Length: 621
Ligand code: ADP
Image 1 (tube, rainbow, N blue to C red):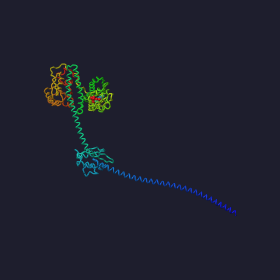
Image 2: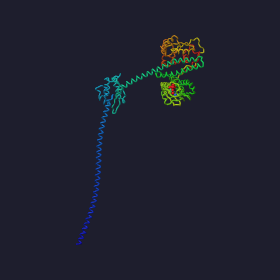
Image 3: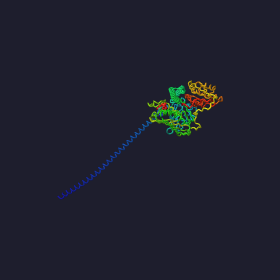
Image 4: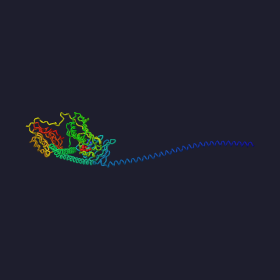
C-alpha cells in the first residue's frame, strides 16, 4: 500500500509536473500570443494615428481651399467694385471736361460721347450713339454749325472724310458758328476704334493773336528805333563830312608843323568817329531789315589783298607779322558783294591786330568742295597770337554790344558791334562764322562762304586805270567840262567846290532835286553829281526826271553819280533802277571826284585834270 501511495504520489507529482509544464507551455504560448497581439495592436494603433493625421491634414486642406475660394470670391467682388468705380470715375471725368470726347468704332459709328461733344450739335436728333461719322460731317455742314469757309459743303465733307481715313489723322482746327475754335485730335485705338478729342482753343488763339499783335508792335517799334538810329547816324555824318572835308583841304595849304599835327588829329578823330557811326548805321540797317547785298563778279584775291594792305600799317606799327596763305585756284571767279566781304575781313583782321601785341596774324583762304556745282566754298581763317577769348566769353562775342569785360581789355577801343555786324553779314551771305580760342593762347576766327562762281571775264577789273592819261597836246580851243553838283547842304557845297577848285571845269550847283532838273536843261552838264536825300525832290526822283527828258529829246544819257550819306536810301539796286550810273558814299573824297571826272569826261572837252596830280597820288580809303 505504501507503494501505492508512493506511486500515487509519484504519479500525482508527475501529473502535477506535467500539468505545471503544460501550464508553463500554455503560459509561454499565451505570452507569445499576447506579445503578437500587442504588436498587432500597436501596429493597428500606429495605422490609426497615421490615418487620423491624414484625415486631419485632408480636412485642413479642404478648409484652406474653402477659405481660398471665398477669398477669391471676395477679391473678385472688390475688383468688380473697383472696375465699376473706375469706370464711373472715368466717365464722370470725361463728362466733366469742357472739351468734347467721343469714340467711334471700326465702322466709324459713334460708340460714346460726352456732353461737351454732344452740345456742339445743339440737340440734333440724329446725332446719337450709332450715327456714322460721315453723317455727322454732313449735318454740321448743312446746319451751319461749322464755318466751312469758301469750300462747298461737299468739298468740305470730302476733305474731312479723307482726313478721317488717313492712317495717322492730322490735327485740324475748325471754327464754329459762335466763333469758337475747335482743335480736332484723333487717335486710332485698339480694335479699330477712333478716339476723338475736340479741344476748345479759342482762348489760346485769341491769346496768340494778341501776342502776335504785341510782337508786331514791338518789332515795328524796334524797326522805328533802328530807322531813327540810322537817320541820326546819317545826320551826324553830314556835318562830319564838312569837318573831314575841310581838314582834308586845309592839309593842302601852307601849314606849320604844329598846325599839321592839329589837322591830322582832327582828321583821325573824325575818321574814328565815322567808323563808329558806320557801325551803328550798319547795325541799325540790319535791324531795320534794310541792308541788302549787291552781288557782282569780283576777285576774291583782290579783296583780301586790299584789306591786308589797308591794315598792314597798323600791324607794322605793333611789330606784327601779317601773313596771307591764299590757295584759291587762280582761275576762281566769284559773284558776291565785295564791299561787304571787305567789311567782314576788315572787322576780323582789324580785331586780330587790335587784340595781339606780339607774334603774327595769319590769313588763310582755301577752297573746299561745295555740294552745288555752280558754287564754290571758301574757308577763311584769321589766326592771331593775341590775348585769346575764354570759352564762356566766346559764346557771347557775336552778340551786339558784347565786349569781353576784363581789365586788360579796357585799353581796347570799340563799340562791340563789329562781330555782331560781321556775323549778320556772313549769314546774309548764307555763310557760317565761328571762333576757336582759349584765353591767352590767341584766336582763330573761321568763316565759310558758299559763293556762286562766275565765268572769267576778259578784263575783270572794273576800277579805272591808276594813272591819268594827259593828252600830249591839250586842245585849247575845246570847251571846259561842265559839272553840275546837286547838294542841299551848304558846307558840303563848299567842300565840293574847294575840292575841284584846281580843275579846269565849269561848275554849277543846285540846292535840291527840282533845281537840278532845271539846271540840267539849261546848263547841259557833261557830268552830274547828285546828292540823294534832298528836300522837295530827292536825287532819285530828279534822276528819273532827267532820264525822261533825255529820252524825249532822243539824247544819250548823261553820267549821273549818286552821292549818298550811306543811310537807308543807299540801296544800290534801287539807285541804279532810278537811272543813276554809279554811287559814292560820303564823306566826299577829292580823289574819288577826280576818278569819276576822269572816267566820264567826254573826249571833246578840255582835260579837266591836267593841273592836278593823278587821282591815286594821295588816295584816302
Ligand atoms: P569791338 O572790337 O568793337 O569791341 P567786336 O564785336 O569786334 O567789338 O568784338 C567783341 C569783343 O570780342 C571784343 O571787345 C573782344 O573782347 C573780343 N574779340 C574779338 N576779336 C578778338 C580777337 N581776335 N582776340 C581776342 N578777343 C577778341
